[in-house]
Image 1: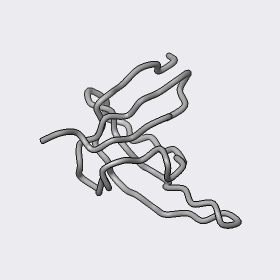
Image 2 (image 1 turned 180 degrees about the vertical axis):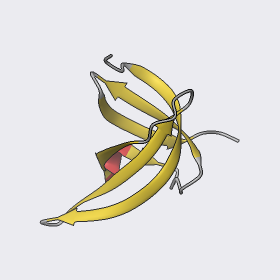
Image 3 (image 1 turned 90 degrees about the vertical axis):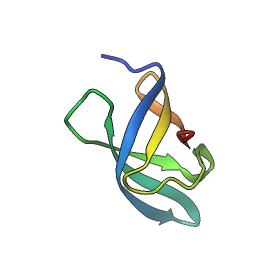
Image 4 (image 1 turned 90 degrees about the horizontal axis):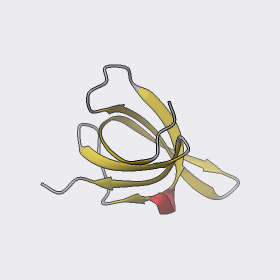
Length: 74
């Protein structure tokens, strides 16, 4: 199944990664309605709102690639 659009997820773990001066975040997350955790590496520019483990976020996907992560509004 290809994910396209915006989905709600819960952050399980975050790890900052620096590769030759370019910063990324390795995100482990669980999409709402699913039990299996998934992980992805996302560029720092694609993450908004300083999400933390346990936070609910909106994740935007294009053809299974995360193009945006934003902390869900409370």
